[in-house]
Image (cartoon, rainbow, N blue to C red):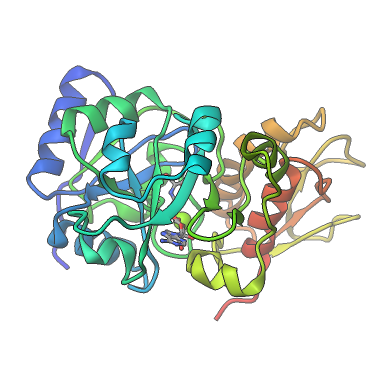
Length: 318
Ligand code: TXA
Ligand code: MG
């Protein structure tokens, strides 16, 4: 693929206007959301969507999330339900994606759904993301803005690490607040958690007024981004490190025995740890260490989502 000059755009009015124009022309723009940076393209333009897969080096069976600015635009694409309404009232705009049956005749490219009869939709809260979606005026398909299998980007610089020269622009909105990809709630059948995130199963169950099923292996395959080695740094990752080994980069959590290179949250705050996770993995990986040892993270609340990402980072590579 030939190199493209990737424009660096500020998240101000001229920057957002330019970014929307690039999307209208079928170009790719990486943009901030409150979870991670997304690699955006016009969801109704087959060529733009194909270029997202190409830029990411992503297997084509992995479907994309579509981002929208308002509820009417969402309802034009999916079969809306009372449960979706309850979840939207509680958590949108925000770090929640819902998978719903695709509406017949929805103008979304077939490449977005990778042939599934359902569509993942999300209404982000990040002001730059909302301004871009409003400025563009249509659905924007956006996976995380990283080469497939690498760590998700929480800053514009992370995007450029793997996508510079492959996309038309990056809109720099600073660091992402949540730092972990959105929670994915499957609503095409019984409410099912397809990917853990900032919004927990408990919070979803309460908003829906009914239990949300845990993801089972079969369902994990319907969210293929959830399989095998994902979010992988170059360095090997060793989890639940009770002690440090020579030559490892050390990633701490809470109070530590001796020194660590970086601490996800010295006070043991899981929200802070989630926001720092990908940024710190990026930094330790850039240090050139062969392995990254990570202290145990409590498996409660947001710790479930953090451990999910860490397990993928540590999974055997192909
Ligand atoms: O926070 C996020 O969700 C970020 C920002 C950019 O919005 N996006 C993101 O996208 O994480 P991506 O492509 O890296 O992850 C999308 C996940 C994948 O695991 C994919 O398999 C799943 O959503 N997915 C998409 N459409 C689906 C569908 N119709 N049914 C089940 N899973 C779906
Ligand atoms: Mg991703």
